[in-house]
Image 1 (cartoon, rainbow, N blue to C red):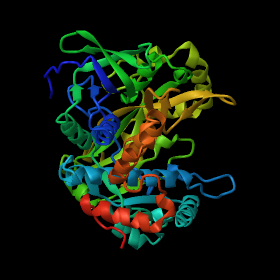
Image 2 (image 1 turned 60 degrees about the horizontal axis):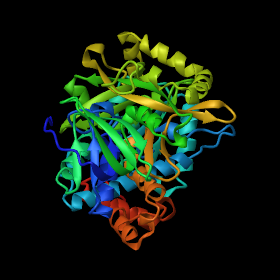
Image 3 (image 1 turned 90 degrees about the horizontal axis):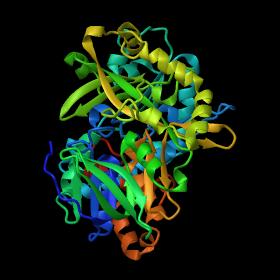
Length: 503
């Protein structure tokens, strides 16, 4: 807990709103590229990484599209679209490259504190789903990113992979699974706090905890005046800056709406809360070592993909099942019930209405989820762990997710389930909206921000050279270069102390 009040620097190069994984990643990249840069970070809570980045609030999968079936949709003609899976897999490799660099330079602690090897498994049942999984596997084999993937419909082999999932299962049920041993579990809360521990030691960086960014106004000179309030003293202050990044999780939408940029118009947000079943039975926890993702029920939104999930949290092995959805009008776990109504304005009301009309099944799904009884949650769990009982589990609240709503010429308004970066025309303001795969692709998202916000600097030989040191595959396609991919995985696997790597 941090209660020390650090003096504000009235003029700074960069202001970051929110002390989550995104701000941490951007800050460390900018400081490495430009050691003389000055950065101030505002966080409304008393520590970094307590909202969406925290381990209990975040899926922690190390999203790499190895097992998440919603990233490989089936087209109308029966073919499988793997384009999103390739993009996410490449993005996670970039994150591992950056973490490798930070570990090598002693900016991060022992990597086992924040990343662990955990197999990623997709598991389905029923003839249609088995057929889909086989087609997905065949399609993914076209990319070297997924070359290590194994597929089987052999019950005995699946029982070796996931004994807890197969024990007590109907012997006549047709099942299939894929497995990637390259999968990881990531504690983004620990990672974020470790990064901030390093950032706070760096000259020119000041982190203000218990300090909430309230507003930002153009200063008339190409920069911004940022207004912030201390929760410890109630004092309000102003900081002038050249560049603002809004990475405040669910609070980003409100702050973006206050920025006087045309690009903010039309954006809205729809909050969805998450619930986990946390296992209390140590024997069950020991029997399972994998992240097992299934297929969402027909009509369910992508965020509802169920998984039985091995997690390593603060050095302890945990087992979670979910997510179950809940609904709250809060945009943050520690937010206000007025967050949603206060986010509706003239410029986004139409988009919000149309998005709502186009997503009535989501509304129905959320109502059903909120009304679920413990016995109904147990029934959902039994599809993945046939032999269990309610007393082995407790309900745990996860973080809030704010799904992006934006204008659409054809639809009026659409609901997005990914992440989106909104950047002003002059590149002086950037805001990150949305949720999954979020944290796992932080490095890729922040690297993608540089040419939009630091247009001159990114072209310099100095920045290009430094970027290549931080992320050696920067500017290249791992999916198109097998040798580069294998070299990258071997290097990052060794430094991050991960398990089975490609030969």
